[in-house]
Length: 242
Image (tube, rainbow, N blue to C red; front, top):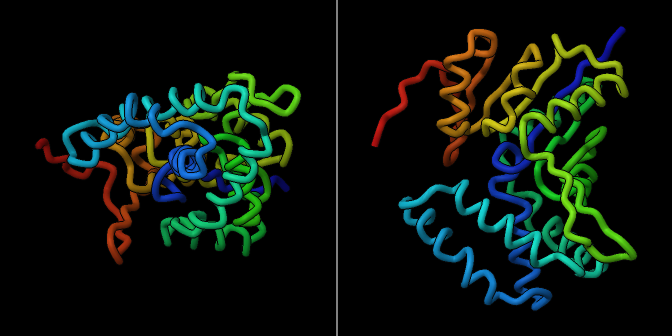
């Protein structure tokens, strides 16, 4: 008998923001990296998004590039310390729906796997926190105890697709009865490959993709969690243009 699995993205799907951004803030707070780089390169993008005058993905791109540059040559001990602080202080800041689904899958002896574009050293700590079966994140390469600037990404749909192939072989998974949870278009292949795809607070791009895809639109469940309510929508829900 093959196993049932549940694949979870983290940022925006489980965690309410970005683990990478939270870690970046901690590195600045503890004066491990210079906050001047933030003000010079990412602050304007953040303010535009915060005022809903800019795109959050643009802000994340700016922060990601700055984050990787700032970590080059940094001792792993500093990274581990600040990562521990992120998990200690922020790891409970998650969506109730997603947290309940992780609990349900574990109670039913399903294979629960985190697949995330966040750094693997943060994803691993979240996996331990939520007692999941396995995980994979973007691989930040260290040499002699310091980050060398190389990142093997796990934020695009192609990388996540390859990771799923590996997990299917490792755990003898039947994708036709398995589950996947995601929020952006980088999760589309993960959602398409399972029998039970769930889009949580999806981006406009992902929602449009699902609605136009005959394979996934018939199977997908759209879940939105706002304030103190969780509700489901049809994949063909009207999207207002503003």
